[in-house]
Length: 143
Image (tube, rainbow, N blue to C red; front, side):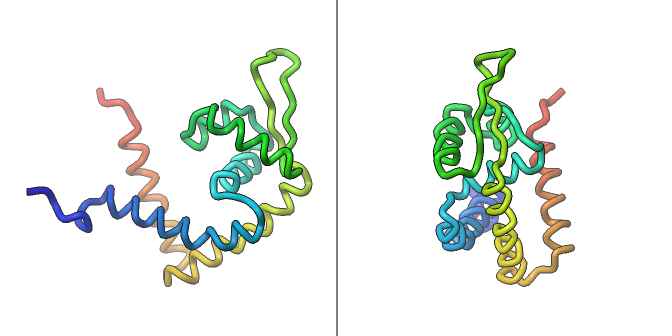
């Protein structure tokens, strides 16, 4: 007999991710962006601009998912897209001042997560590091 769902780590991580998304959604709606757009803004801020392919790799998504997402963000004035002069297949994406400003507003998401979780920032950081280690271990190829 399989383990009850609540005893399966995969379900706990999935359900927690869904709960975080539900917590963030009203605030993201108020800012006029979706959760995937929030992730793109963060990835661009980390790297100082990226190609569409690099964004897709960083977020573990397909380029075909990122392209329409970035186009909508460009129409909203949050990013710019520019085709590479050396490789026509590459599209460089950069934050605009409006995108940077919106990302500053997104700080409330982390504050809300801390408040709602009842955990300290140190607790959340430690939990995040452990989950990242698990992800890395599962992503590495077996010998």
